[in-house]
Length: 299
Image (tube, rainbow, N blue to C red; front, top):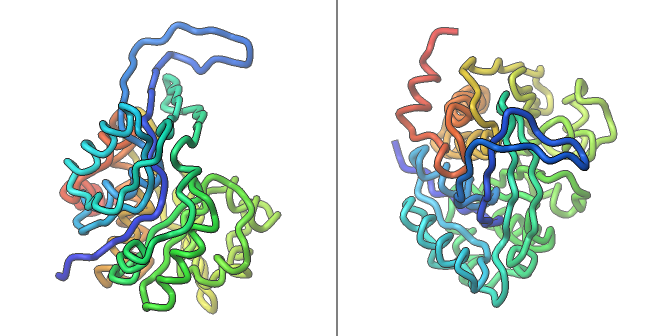
């Protein structure tokens, strides 16, 4: 099997993660139990997840000139991701403040920092996109940058997977270049204005889409084909922070390897399930052997 070449355009953050029995309500202070500081950001997470799932990956993004930036580059590089195009911007790196409750639920505040300065793409960065089998992008960096990457990918025959997160307006020019859209219920509603139980509404925007539903699995929809529900893989949930990133990256890797998309969604569901069994974002992203184990588990 040929190794999938993935290019990821997206954010890199330092995640400051605290755990407690219950998340605080507005105005409330609660005592936590643990704290860890870990590399994160949807772009960096998906790049690391792609490598662990078996792909080669180049990451295009920006870090700050602060100590967080130094640590982010070192950690992402150590994970096997090509960071040769990772920019350094004067100022602070992106930071995510993550609170995790006892049932694995979370609340996250992100300050973008250097990610906001990742505007436009150099010719070298565009060439990296064109050389990939699959481009994976999210919306934690300026949408103009994501659009430029998607158009470059489309011109070269590189498949475009857009994880439209966080929920925000997506220009028609970007949607027209997307081969596969990945969204959760909140993001789907923001794009279509429809209820989450209408995944087919996404096909008015893109030719293929996956609607993730957490513990209720996912819907795969494609024009001129019946919708397919893929059940979640049942595991004990510790922290759901990076499950969507593990899912999206594994989906892109499997598709790049030539799997049928329904099978790829099943494999991605196994990746998401493997991720939630551990605390943290990048450190919880599963390796291929873990994904295969859950994928082969009897339903």
